[in-house]
Image (cartoon, rainbow, N blue to C red):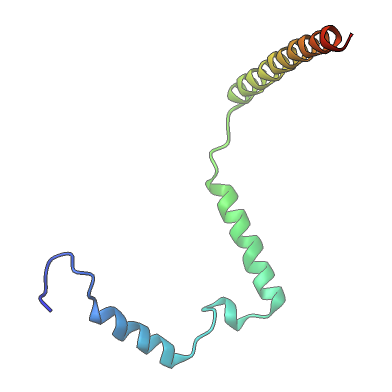
Length: 95
């Protein structure tokens, strides 16, 4: 086979995976710890991810909440009008 640019034939990757199988490692760092150690790592990862979150400011939170409440009120009104229309249609058809 020729060595073309973008070829999917990667013999080096096969050699690397064969070497990692010989070592017999299971689970990396987590494989060495007991259940309490894994639980501690899990909670540390949760805290690290929460620190990455961009939290909204108070004004953004207020505006987002207002938009959601207005949307819900509009949807309630729409469903009420549609429900009333179906009710009147059923009364008309079935007497």
